[in-house]
Image (tube, rainbow, N blue to C red; front, side):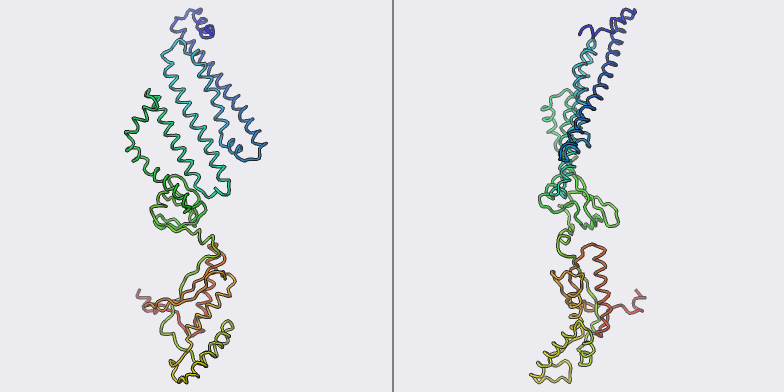
Length: 414
């Protein structure tokens, strides 16, 4: 061993160099040889470990080991081999310079900590990718949990490096660090809030990846594509990306459309404004004309017979339409729209179907259509709703009703 340490030193002394020069040149030559050995050892270790890992992953059925290789965990584990060799051989190189040993050990420890962090990061990234392939975990905020784990690992790693650099024990360093906890809480406030929000979101199952959410405060209206520790990414319908702070999911209000998507239909809820002055009782002539509308012809006959019998039994004077029981154009129109929607092929018959009057307004009497389309896709839903209201608006004049709109002169003044 002694001969190896001074192999080049003796040679340089024989060439007539001074002892100091011979020591430095001996150290540089040994350092160069060590660097070459470490490079070769690293290449060999990587080749062996990576080839073994690849061959092993090809033989197994699980996808985990394939992901482990793709995230370079075996490659980084291979770097441990030159690190161990360096620890074993550096005393030979710096035998004549013991004052360097302290700093070299410090650098090796720091490198070892950083290498360990990268190995753990690769393993955690592998778990993240693997969990995302599991159907029951696919919509869970896995990114948040991995980021939390990495945050703690980096904190411990950086603290360990600082403890090494200032030559302080790890426990004593953390004890000192506790005094600065208030400052750390302030620095990592958003991270802590995001961590708490991620846990609450996961436990309450309030938002999943793939959910369609609407959050007007942040201009978000689209599908959640990622949930991590600090932000929730939403891809809007115009393909823009909105980033929402994760803690906003528990501090602000938002609308999650998952209930609609998992139900049997998407709600249609819209009104037609009818002029109040166009509402009137129907005469026999009007009723006979409306019987030509097939959807309500039987309804009109049945109702007409019931009303006639009622008025006859009570000897009602029908010379004035308001006397006794009567049918109105808005009532028959409401029944027509109800029947039309109930027979519409794109409306879910298992869910609520209703046509109702709302409270009269200065702009007319709202007649609201409330139903659910069977197809929940946005573009198809809009088409179905437009198809229903195209028909309803075109049918209004057949019942001697009028849709409210501002007079032309008034509209021009506006």
